[in-house]
Length: 124
Image (cartoon, rainbow, N blue to C red; front, side, top):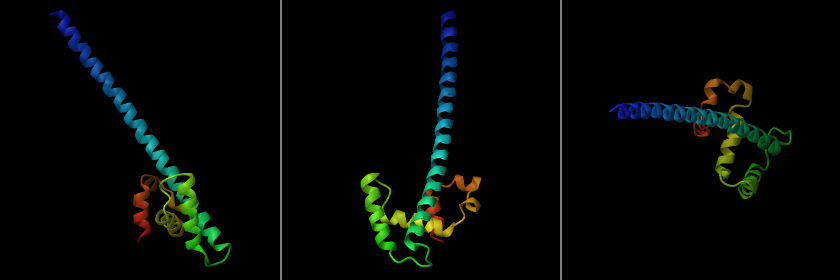
């Protein structure tokens, strides 16, 4: 009879241990996701800035944006893979145009936004 009680308590301890480990992993994954998301948003902003700079060559209006986006999309898709369609690169470009001052844009609240959320903001 005493063995059953000990095993029952051990099982409760094990379940608590497993739950704690599970929670640690969930928190770590959440933290990693937030960090990666923040870095990707910053990277997309930088890419948008470079696209605008390349298009304009210091001029007020771009002359060959369509050509540049198409070729960049092909290059990135071939060398890096998915995620760099022409439509997405136009969104990245628009992101920079809507938020030309990243430091003003970058707040704790924005760091919680996904690229999908930011694309929706760009469309307003």
